[in-house]
Each structure stands twice: as structure tokens, then as C-alpha cells.
Amino acid sequence: MKEFVQCKAVTFSLQVRDTGEKDPPQQYRAKGGHVMNKMVLYSLLGMFLGITLLSARSRASSAYGEGKNLYLSKCQICHGIKGEGNGPAAFALSPKPQNFTDPAFWQKDVEKKITTTIAKGKGSMPAFQLKPGEIKALIYYMSHTFKPGSSSGT
Ligand code: HEC
Image 1 (tube, rainbow, N blue to C red):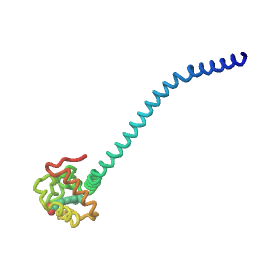
Image 2: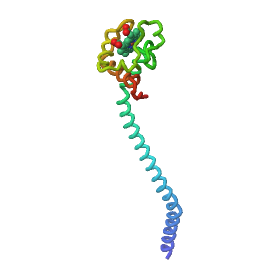
Image 3: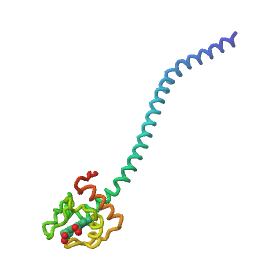
Image 4: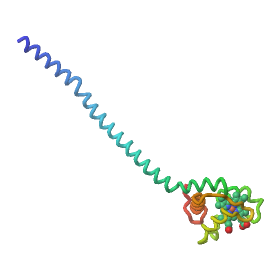
């Protein structure tokens, strides 16, 4: 009988502990776990999306960005930020630097013309020693920024 009572007491205390401690925390845990799972899922998704978008974007715009840097550091002083041939140094030059927003400039042979002009210079324009990839990037930037009707990338 004594043993039975003790046993009951143990069971009772276990039950109390079960209902008293387990139930509410289990609910929280279930909720919390759910929220955590969602958060982890969303952040992973976000990271994945971000990386995918970034790599796609950088692939598309790396030529643009490289070309832009080259243009701003080497050509803009004469040809102007907007390619209109009126950069800060243009006033001193005659004939004037080429206006890249002029539709007449964008003929079929324009890439060859840009490449040759960069390599050899023309009139008061000095020659530039650029790698083929750099010239390509410059042409990409110029044709996506100054060419009439081109959608200027950012
Ligand atoms: C020192 C000023 C100056 C700089 C810097 C300069 N240019 Fe020029 N550019 C000129 C002038 C001046 C002309 C017109 C030359 C002429 O017609 O005699 C010209 C003409 C051109 C032409 C037209 C050539 C043709 O046959 O119609 C292209 C293309 C060109 N530049 C590209 C560039 C590029 C690309 C850069 C940068 C890598 C650059 N220029 C840097 C002054 C400059």
C-alpha cells in the first residue's frame, strides 16, 4: 500500500510536470519552429535569388561598367559625359571631338572606326593603348548610352 501510494505520487508528479511544463512550451516550440523554418526558408530563398540576380546582372553589365569607367577616365574630357563632343577640353580643339549622339556616326563600320581611332588617334585625339576587351567594353558602353534610340543602362 505504501509502495502504491508512492507510485501514485510519482505518477502524479510526473503528470503535473508533464501538463505543467510540457504543454505550453510545446505549443511555443511548434510555433517558434514554424516561424524559424519560414525565416530560414525565406532568407535562403532571398540569398539564392540575390546571388542569381547579381550574377546575371553583373554578367550583363560588366562590359557596360568597364566601358563606362574607361570612357569616363579616357574619353569624357573631350567627348563629354553625354557623348555630345563637348567635354571640358573640347573648346580648345579644332576640329571638334566627335559627337557620339549624332546618328550619322553610327554607320555599319562604326566598331571598326572606333577601334582604329582608339589605336591610331585622329587629329588632336591621341592614340590609346587598350586591350581588345577594353575596346569592346568601350564600344558596348558607347552604343548602349550615346547611340540614338539606345536604352541607356544604368
Ligand atoms: C584630347 C581629346 C580627346 C580624347 C581624350 C579622346 N578623343 Fe576621340 N576625338 C577627339 C577629336 C578632336 C576627334 C575628331 C578628330 C578629327 O576629326 O580630326 C575625335 C574623334 C573620335 C572618333 C571619330 C573618329 C572618326 O573617324 O570619325 C572616335 C570614334 C573617337 N574620337 C573615340 C574616342 C574614344 C573611344 C576615346 C577614349 C578612349 C576618345 N575618343 C578620346 C578628341 C579626343
